[in-house]
Image (cartoon, rainbow, N blue to C red; front, side, top):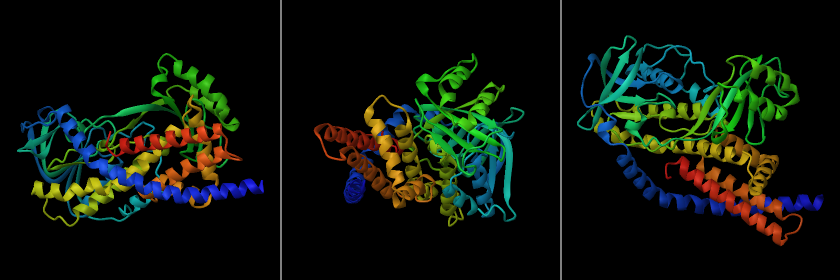
Length: 462
């Protein structure tokens, strides 16, 4: 055991050195291909979505006036942005399609990094603001000579109205009907979360969530109140049972229930049998590939989405809000759309550290923790768990990035390469053999190729 421990420590030391070198090579390579990849993506996006089909050039509808900024959507991002800009003295009009309390399973978790962004908005401070909120459905953006001048929308009585603003910020969430106007909106749905609420049960650690690495995919538990626990079952898209005909209940009872914690089993079955308790949410993935459009901007899930397994959506959205607020503060006059557009180009670059770190980790963890017939994936699972058990900078480093406290792509590259090398080292113990060398080579190749693909997918290159 002592010899094995010494060998593992030696492997970790070597992994640190090699991972650092490979991390620099990896990031340098991606910086080279990024220019070409983004250029190709923009050309492809412009061919897929002709401009005349996505923006209304006609100023139809009753004119309701002009404000500094229009915000489409009053969700987490929209509400926080309206408050922040209103505090800065901006005239803000917020248009939300449904002002009723949402009944859904999205937006329940906020990572520590997102909480830090939230408190920078000083939500407890009172101030005089010029913010109007109204219910309406934005049907299209209003364009004049290549610049977005406002929006067309229908109010609650279905009357068509037109609102004007120097800047229109679209943050109407994952179901945005305007993103096609402003970005390449290619969305992938690798899986669905089937969610329901458990009562009359407790997790072993009441202050923490839990995850079960089950076949075919993970099961997540986290408390949402002192008496309720949310259960999220990840179901692959190609195997999604029907909810209406009872197939989903049968799937959960027969294939999922036997794998949950014993202390939650009875509540799990009761929750499935409760009427209208099961909700289904698609796990959408969309890289941020915006079209630079004067007068308009995308933030939050309207711009970029990742798998929900890490619950990082609100953290990225609030980070976007703080970043945009800080960028707009020096600009007292937003009337020159071309100047503001050039100034705000940095927004899409400055958001990358937070968004790409959380996005890539979410995709990697879902890929690794989902069941696979490939034994190499199982080896990567064991390597990931062993890597976290090393403690110290290895576990705390990954945890800090998942939570949004350390949004550093270079650190992410280091840990992903170190994890791969650690996994190879585990397979070679106690002595290398031809079979172990072959398995180690496969693990390293699959690990690196998967992470390289996910990196490109989540940064808009593929």
